[in-house]
Structures are given as structure tokens and as C-alpha cells.
Length: 143
Image (cartoon, rainbow, N blue to C red; front, side, top):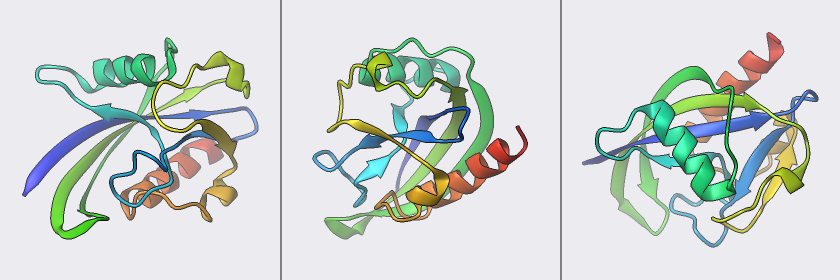
């Protein structure tokens, strides 16, 4: 079984809204929305991958990353249920202003801010995104 480690960054606002990527045209796991980030390159730290991916995807220099931990799940590709992958998320959060003009979307179909309640109605990566949202919700409730 193939494995992949992905550094994800969840941007959040003072109002506890989170910024998600519209992935309808680039989905791999049946997700229409997901977090920003991507795979670690050989020899790259999870922090370096998070910073690089945000620069590549949003043309944004992320600062103030806080590491929340990691999650691993076995996920099926939505076009081929026999193609299973072991995916590990290295989860980071970063506080931002709710201002889409801060970002220049270079991957996916756009971005939007959502409350945690609103994310429950979105098509996201099965299992791992749901569990990541629980971790983010716990983090935000302790602010």
C-alpha cells in the first residue's frame, strides 16, 4: 500500500472561521473542499513543506504556524475503491484576517471561509478531514 505524508495548514479567524480550498476540479478522494497543503518532498521537514505549499498554492508567506499533531488514515481513491492509500496529515494552524484579497489562488477552484458547523455539510476527504476538524475545533475552543 502506498503511503503519503501531507502537511496541511488550517487558517482561522478571530470568529473561528476556517479557510478551505475548493477542490472540485482536482479532487482525489471525492472531496469538493479541503485544507491547504501538500506532500513533503524528500528531506523536507513538515514545517518547511507547510510553508512551501502555502506559497505555491496561495502565493502567501505564512507566519506563526502552530503544530497540532498528526493523523493517519487509510483512504480509498474515489474513482477506484481498490486503490487504497495510507495518508498522514501533519496538521498546522495559523491565524489570519478574513480577507480573501490576502491570497492569490494558484491551485484549485477558489477559496472560502466556513464556520466549523458549516463544514459538516461539505464534501471533504473521508475520515481524515473529519478527524482533523475535531482537532481544530478543540484548539479553537481553548483560545
